[in-house]
Length: 251
Image 1: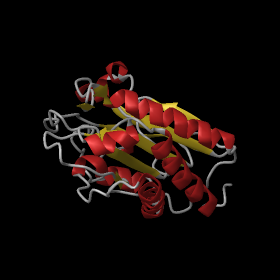
Image 2: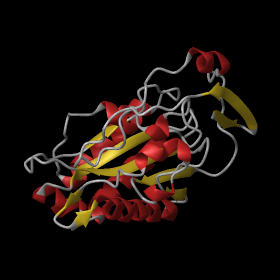
Image 3: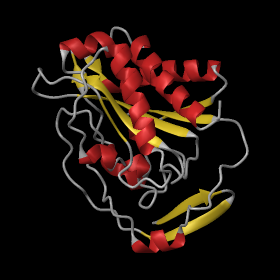
């Protein structure tokens, strides 16, 4: 399979990639598939030089991915995802919570003039936006585990990963009152939608991105926020995204 990137109207072929089974997905955790290799092939780094990259003209755009949504429709390169339907808690499915929050974020951003795509598990090839946030909810057999966490790509060409995650943490912590879980996983940093060097259906290298675990669906306290009051996490995430876009002088 060849990976194709769409770069300002040009197409860059990075070569043939062999996909392998990377690990077992935890039975309960809502985390995405096992993190892909964080090492970008040398051939890709030689071909791609983003130091002089400039944002194309056009409206401000955000991509909000609802984790596990339409997971059965993924292409062959993402076949390992088809059995990962997310966590559950108190009869609630993660995918439904993710989609509810994603849609509410999109409504807030659109009202502020941001063109917003609510994306399923399958990201459009080389997806380019001013910000991309993937929405997930965690889960554990230990029902006492609680809290939210955010992570950006391990390999970040935009230089904006830390700012984006810091702003998301600031607004989410303040508005939800949930604790921050410090246990950011390799799965999060190596999230498949970040892995443009490996998958065709991944974000563009110059799309600032983060993945959000909004709380533990398996925890009663977290569910009171992310399930019973989805407007709260949606507003918090939207405010973090809006502040980020303002720092980029896009709003």
